[in-house]
Image (cartoon, rainbow, N blue to C red; front, top):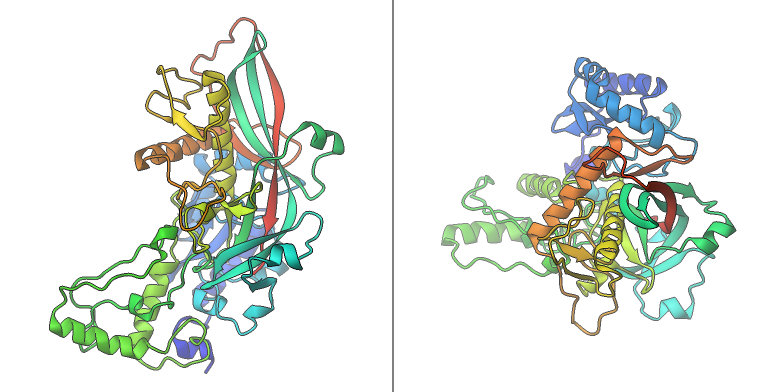
Length: 496
């Protein structure tokens, strides 16, 4: 019996239904439907259309979806923006997808059903990767990266603070189609990011188009990337249990969404004596099971195995705060780097090295949203030096700046609002926007993306972007349009 099976954390037997689903998937991908994936939904296997974010629970439903109007609209956009000769090198599960061959597909496990997070983060050879223990003097002392590679210091990965090597993988070009009247920009029609790849822009373009002050750093997602793990404190695993191992009484949840939430949870003082006695017994059972020993020790207690599976499932389901979709283990996730300070933007909001993750495409869309707001603010209020300020006079521009909004002058983390500035001591950067305003930001991202799907920009390379249709479709007298290259964004990859 394999060690994974003894742990009770993963099923290794491939069912007949799964084999049939895999065969159907291979046939679909051979026909060019490389955006269709096979995912697990409880005990069922479902086909998932990455373009439409649509689960299909049978072959018949999938066929109906592929012939539907929604899919045809999304596929028409994908042919223009995602299926070119220079595709995005990411597979995040919500927009970017893997177009690998059938042979490569056989090597991959089902999305959402690959090796469990406990196995992924506790490999015996986990120390052989490009990671070193955190040393604040390492950057200046002995690290010599390649020309465009970086060493990012002090990141919380697998319950340790580490320095990680981020390899440069390519440039993205942010550009816009602008409308002008008498030489003054009055409207952004479209805003997009075009993937240029490792070759990047020409020397002439590099000289004329500035690089962005922020970069995108990508990872292969697993559950304790950027936050404390499931077994860092065994007491966090436990709900109140009765003597037979079943749940009894209130269940307590601990939030792991924010870097500030990585502090120890406090035990409630109002437990009954019976619940306390039961919980203490279960804690004793889990006392020796930490993340570094769980794959070396056989967990024989059924109650502990059940609790581990339950908490692993709940804890691994992180939600992207931009699109509100789940982030799946093994898919590509991204965070934001301040290139001026060399720190992740979340680094100014906590001192633990914790950071937030999002789908790669969502981070690209967030960059575009911030750029659209920055341009609009400059046009309405002139060039601002502050990170943000309240909008005045109730002027509306492009439907993006309203009389109740706050102006944006910098990219920041969509969840904790950090910008990666240098902080001193234990003083952290303060947040700027109320939750109601950040919710409005997410709505604007969604609306811009939906409009882009209906009317994308035809470009030489693969792209994704926003469209801001004018309320008045009639052309304004003297209005001209032009395309302007605005900024170059660096993309990095951390292999763990």
